[in-house]
Image (tube, rainbow, N blue to C red; front, top):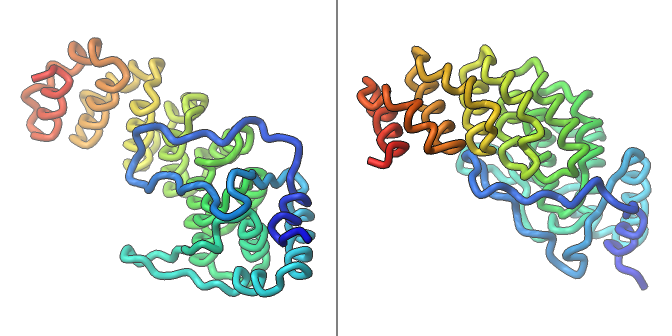
Length: 283
């Protein structure tokens, strides 16, 4: 007899994604690294939810109810724990399987969960080993809470390329700064993040200081050559934080050229900037 997880995987597996889930770049910004692959007998299998993901989720829940009602009940009623940072987070071995994504997506769309719990459910999706990109892109446009939208954008770090490009594009255009910041940060966490260079360059001019800084950091992390002119212009910014981000980003993109660009800031009034310049100059 097939296990519940095997049955649901057989139900929801589609032919192929746009490409393998990209690994994270070596350099990331403040967020934890992508969790380990799904454990148990289903390790290495990719659960893929396509454009008709709502129907797949509904049928997957029904099959899990018939095959393993106890597991369904545990996943459907599992509470998140409160972290030291006072955020909610789902943890435990039950998550490390594609059927957890099915149940969690069902909980997200149920209308019964608070914004805080919805954000925690979204945050847990990458740890299930599922490919849930189309679902998140669809949900992103309808989610009213910016904290949840920001978490959806962050979760796209492991999504298929097409979903990530579409979802992060929505994130960059969001009316809420925390969502735009999440998009700028997440772009640097994808191997194909440089494809979002134009959006990141526009974000350098964002009116929100946090978004601006994150975009500059990501341009540096992704080594986007086309951003050097924009970054050079920020070396004369009145904000020391902006000057620091510009020095660091230029140093990562082209250390040799950056030595000339940043030399004038070697005696910057802000010690952090001066120290960053010294590192670029190799002093």
